[in-house]
Length: 424
Length: 83
Image (cartoon, rainbow over all chains, first blue to last red; front, side, top):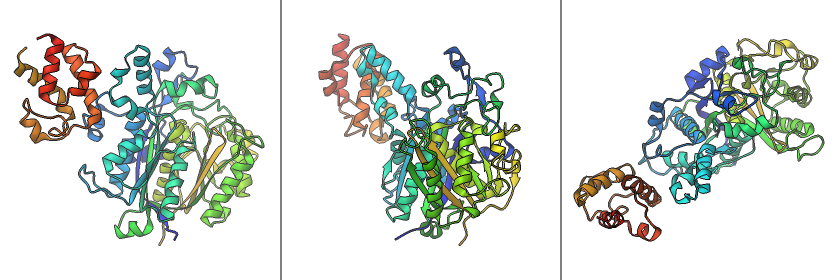
């Protein structure tokens, strides 16, 4: 038994747009969500810029109950609930706390660390010998599966409800885990996505590793520069992306709006061999992941119209382009279009894959390629491999059939998915 | 503080946690937190913390275990406040 899997709902909480409409407008127009943050400066960060979604108190109260908001200090759960609930509604389902338990729908919602501000609060209380003052909220807001647990209860879902974690691959991996589950007939619908806190405590370690850009504190919107010669490290971001995956049969039965089809993908690891380390990818495994995704989808590399890359704006961008050219056996003018959402929202870490999958699916649905901003000076090493026009700096409206999206993460882990314009 | 005043304060404390509005409306000395108000048992510890803050008292583990109804809770608060 092998089901076709389609996408019937989207939700997004991104630094440059909260909600599908605002986000779509922003990525079409090339709007940056990166701003300066005084608290990073106060704590002595080298990189004082980052991407934080703007959410009003009023909006919070629309999604979470007063009880859920008591002692609530987990931005990743907040973002995940917003994106997840939006996606669920976008797919045509209603929100009802007394709904019948739905055994045919499940959740894979990933994160890296979640609820780190709540965790900090708990640590201070424990060190202050006030462990009993933690109350009941500490565990629920700091367990990694907090997001899937909150969403599972809000939506009343009875299939598998779980959380995955694979660093910056997390969101794309979540999508592929949900895809496999529906494809194999274990579930009809899966809410998939990932979420990441907006917190200096999440970002501090990266600042210490000197992988974040410290050269654009005065010009935050220019800071995230994937594929640029003057790229100087990634800019941290945060937020959440969510997608409703559904068997084609179920989607047609419900007469649901279909955004695109997931036709295949692959997840692997470079095993920290052949040049791979805890922090660097094994190029051979990256290429294999892409090739295996194409094989799983049953398409030829020549059928790929657009690549939505991982492309973080570190020195690894050039290597990523090389990997794409080798995996697809396409270069220069034959190379597909390529873009990186990180130029606008920064690197949303565990949430990156999911937010970028949402952006990829929007490009198929609305037939456009969003621009790469801050890439007026493309890296010369990249230009040796692919033609300049393949890196659009302005939005392009174009007929798109297939988009390939890949994410790579610390631990030398890779995930690659192929989205196709839905046709009967 | 009279018992009635205590119950009024207590009812404001438990209000965010209750799941049975009807039982809450007729809250009295014999109301049970879990069976009547349908409060999630995990939230009982939060109610205890809120009580400690409101009355400026500290509630030990043994007392905590008994605080399942309005009556028992009021008695323990009175004892801790020496009233």
